[in-house]
Image (tube, rainbow, N blue to C red; front, side, top):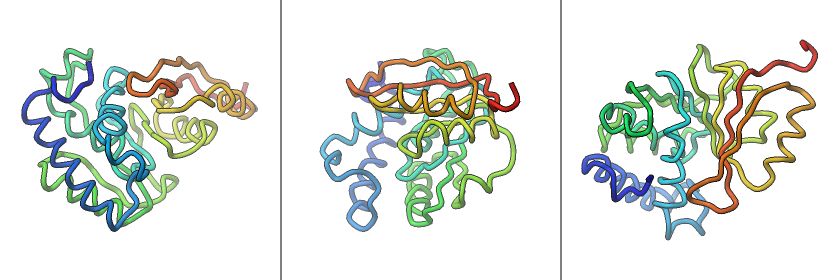
Length: 206
């Protein structure tokens, strides 16, 4: 379902530009693990695209964006209303990418410029962001207990790409928060998981 080859031509072209820029910039900035460079499409791009059906609302905040996964990839399809409908998304949405690494955010700005992608790019610590969003996304940024704290602050709904230690992370997060969640298998990584988190409350408030 999330194979790039099946996507509209314009999206495919933009994602190819993204891949080429990543390979070029990777020589100077550590954007992704070197061992994944031979399979950028599956390991990073399609891994990010599989979050589309889990998004809610029209304002998406991606924290710890780094090389742009998943935020910038999602931004590339965010205005394709007809395309999004097949995934149950009825309206286009906006994406804000946040990371404190200025060089990585310069890379994302160049990706946005060359692909014409509409995305807000903020070089700052997540704690300094203001406003409310509908969905918080993250990939490889922090442990679940940290992510849930940010989700509570900004949206009360988070979608996170996680690995095989997800159950332990849920247990750790439960010491500070009460929350509902659902876990889904990743379609790009046998050991990967997608977790959605919502109805978040601090333990001391229960």
